[in-house]
Length: 348
Image (cartoon, rainbow, N blue to C red; front, side, top):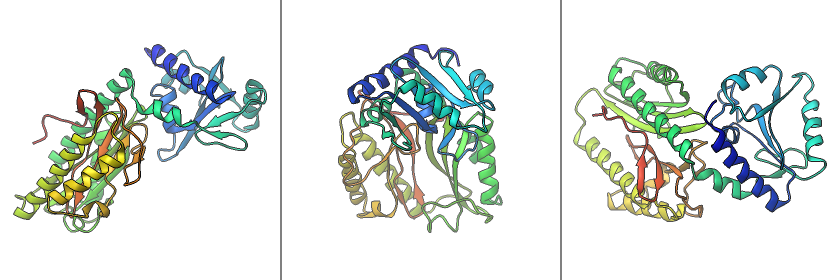
């Protein structure tokens, strides 16, 4: 991966500053989310659902290495990693050699990790704050992802037919995403019968019928674009139009409240008020409403007691819902306002 030199240098500098503050000899980033962040969009994923991949990033005060085994070394070097990162590869059948290498680098000093093992410590909170403020190159990758995920959604729902099953619709969605180099980490399909019943309607063999909901959590370069859209094969009823309008009003209100410095519990409170103003008091209790995102589909889910503050450059995805109606988009919070990412101008 070319062109990552400045981004990598800035991230390593941030990690080392936090290490110095906390007296750490090393940081080990094992989760696929932290690995993608630390390697500027690299992927350690082989099994799509794995939380920890086939490699990790080790950072010390004087060095940085991707640690993996000989199976993955060449592919990671050629396809996933910034050129400035060294790769240490050990025998797959002798995992203790990796631990011996790490021990030789840290010389007994404390080690922190996002997935601590043994005597390792959890990552300091400062690193999560740093990760939440997306850098310029990360924002560009996110913009491209959001646009292409939205385009995939448009293509799929334009082609969809009422006689398709939920499995068929989910398969078409996966094909549209994979053809763009995007991993479909989640595709939910709500069909006509099940839409009013289940907020998390997974794909089924039932035909979608007169309307359907499609939900993406779409991952590329470690970043997640989250979006929800509906398709109708008949005119919506008056009640359906009202519910669609109501969830859109709630989304507009919560996006308006999402500003740098705002605490998630305060934004959540505005969302609760918006439901009540739309005539649906207490509806927020029927489904989680979203929160911050980025290298996870949700980094922090907003709740009444969530005091995490939104930073300039934080990604957010809100998903207000009512029975049979839902809306969801991914955005970046900036000083100038909310920048929506999951937009396709072709969407009607």
